[in-house]
Length: 458
Image 1 (tube, rainbow, N blue to C red):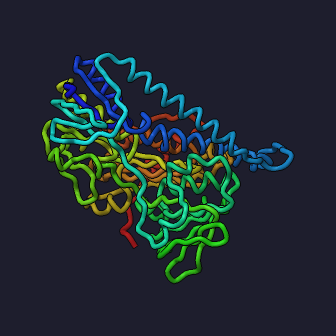
Image 2: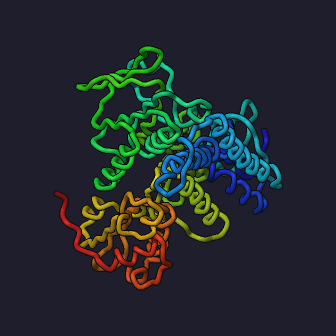
């Protein structure tokens, strides 16, 4: 049996910095990873998808070149092998950088294998028995495979396996209408693939306000993406060398390739958590308290597997919370975190805080302001006038409750709002600030200067 002060299971976005921080504090640490270091973000999430999105954006701008007075001889041709090679090189650089950092850390041992709890303090890794006083779980999540008749008989892609493609699908059918689905749909459409999105719900990005969902749909449809809403798929089959979806009460939907993007589930079903006495909820997420401790006081859960966030930035913040409480005597909590994220369609959606629906349900007196990108000079100059910005404010405290910004640079612009909310400052601070012209951000004070009461839902 090998003894450690701490064992970290999973080398995603929370595990490695925590392992290195604990080792730097003098602890003997083992970090166990069964696949590649870096987790979803580096291997199948943020790094590869945003690299591919950059290539897709380049193709899109070549097609639009004439709008800017630039003449190209014919449209772009996507060399998917070169696109994939660029993506692979960037991923490998990130992966190797993280691996090198872990291997260079004193007191820290990187182990390859599958970890399974035998008790709250004992873990089996491929037949080797490890013991530690403290254990930290950072095992991430994977795509949901729906229980559909015929699906096990047809080839399909998920957000990980689609990364291996070095040729373009003729017609990609995307099952799902949320964030991962939409990013891949637009990306492949810009590469030159015919794309159809099939969503069971009544609108795309169902967690967003209805006006945001409608704007996203218009953006995607304008690029030639076919969208089927309220489409309940009842079975999947093969036809003519491709795939076909049977939809309840509607014509079949056929394509050459199928991408499943209908949700995520935590990788917690094969860790031996019952043997460790670690409780999970009804969706198999590990239950944690506000400091990320599980039902066993010597075990913590970080990242996607705890259900308290599904992003790289929330996973990294989980590391910061655990490290602060254990090593810095600095009380930090998950409940202090302001929800914020971006959806990397083009133009991107930047989101922070409450939606309109949540603001109404809060019982507050709410003010709101909105401005279309068609009235933002920087957006006009860039020729990117799709979308709008919307802010929500508490009329009594004058604090910002939330924002939805859909437009050029929205994933960066939204941080103006996030930082003000984190400071708990009144919106008048931003309203009176002098922003740089010409930028998208400069219109945020104008929006805050024209607030109106939020109307009741129709």
